[in-house]
Length: 142
Image 1: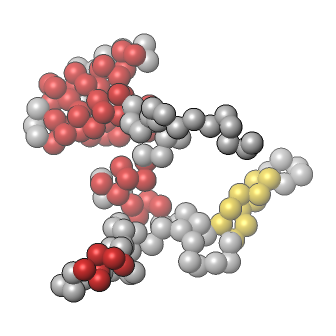
Image 2: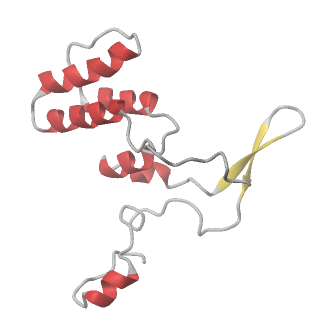
């Protein structure tokens, strides 16, 4: 009974706005700033925002952060941009709302939580792949 209302046909994996912003990032990296601006402006036009004349990687980062908020793509973006270390303090504490309306950060007490620079930039190779290829070295930290 619990899953009677869940129907997984036509699941959305990637929105068109994300495709445009990834395309803008790729064109910018290839030196085609005009096409990158065109793609960013397509996203901005849908949101009824004014067009930009030129775009930088920082502009694309901001657009992705705003347009794709809560969709689960930010972690991979930060890793790809080499900004994973910005998450190094994540998991050390959690916010707790006090009765007086103040927020107190309580330490978790578990050092295994959170992003670990030097380890979490890459995923571990699956055990099956390690068994099939004896020349494969596991990623650092796993």
